[in-house]
Length: 87
Image (cartoon, rainbow, N blue to C red; front, side):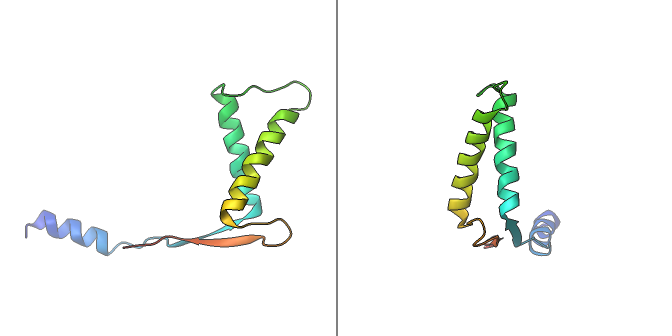
């Protein structure tokens, strides 16, 4: 085994990997806001002048879908821990 191969093996086996993250209902709302902002910035959707009601509806739909995927329900389950599977 070459020195380079040893270095690669050591670098992948000795590093510390964050294996879990606490995710809250507020975190998923922030993701939904960022998605809507991305869609607006890239002109997939446009902002309306009357209080951005359309944008809030899209944000709510995205937020609900992310929460459904993660099993987060407002006022019921406020946070979950997401873990990474490391092989």
